[in-house]
Image (cartoon, rainbow, N blue to C red; front, side):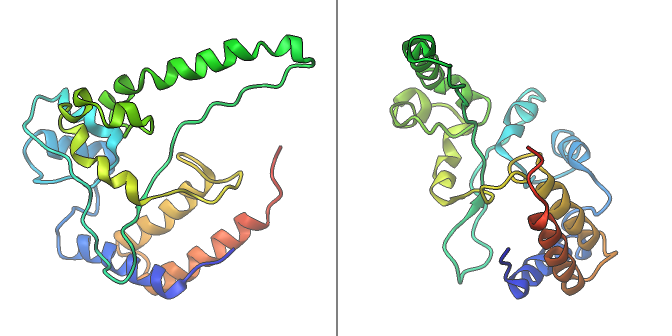
Length: 203
């Protein structure tokens, strides 16, 4: 497990400033933040693309763009995740029915516009480059964020909703609310991640 503790402390200090300077209320959770935006009590929301439909259903005027770079000494990056298909291996080549598996995977790719309507940036380039996607707003406005997509490490505890997200989120929250200093938060982050990385995979 490798972590740049100084960089983590710098990022956490920035997050702490957001609440300290009252740019973002420190006592609001994800659902509360959406409500603040859709009721006109917030001017912006830093969240994931999956919130597109929730905000659209509220019938408020809004747009979505990639979050600008905050730290200029590194390439643009944004946290990302993607859906994957796991196709089970059958006991024999005859039983694998490869054509059906590939047909199913292809049908998912050909439904990329539907996924895009839900907020996803389509990885299937024919959809991403299509006129229909470019006319899909606000979803097409943040497609360039995918160029800086950074994934969690390939580990059992990674991915959206995974254990690492919970652990890191807990540390970030304590800094955001002022219960922990950015430096102490970065040190705790190192300890928590080392503990997590040392655990054997459960399966």
